Length: 307
Image (cartoon, rainbow, N blue to C red; front, side):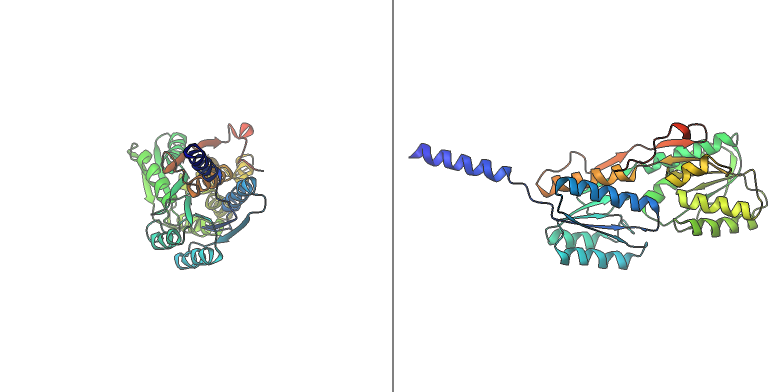
């Protein structure tokens, strides 16, 4: 009888450990779905979620860099009973109460692309390195001297880190003068266009621009064309399809540190699913390595991972 009881207990333990929680619903809140980068990130997350469970429900929404809007989105996800939230935090610290609320409701939260206080895990590019790569290329192109601007963006951790990496590079060159580094071009093409028009009006001599993402770089190039300004080196971060075209055509854009939003999102969903089932990652922060895409190597660039 004792042997039967032990065998039964062992079988119950084995069955219990084998029963993984289902991934039935995922909520994704992103900085701006007006940016192709975030659209691709959402697609990568959805593809991975459906690989885990073909009938999973995935809801991707745009926070538009509005903290209150993102709080409401998290509340809506909790009310809808999602199992996993991927969050591209508008503010890495101020979002923490929303994440605590999600945890209290039994929801796993993974930060993507930027950090978020209290998240179970974070998957992002090494953004300091991305800024370093782009700005080292810019410094080399200028021969270590010239007047440059750092075209800033929304103050999320990814942008702050890119600017930090860029400034670390420029600090090594006494001949490089940073004319401006605090203008927020909103992470968008229109923002890049507007801010760059201001730079070009204000500075009769401008040799280089580091834009914190590709949409801003494309907008900046357009502004330079409109104001008939040449001999400016523009670099950025993302390695988006639009920047591939820009690097192959007659633009001022010379390089971009490439990320892979599709692969990033897939890894975030996989980690989130593991956390749901009691398996914590060995490292709570996963940093993906950027690569520099330039006019010289763009022909060999494979682009973002896709379906």
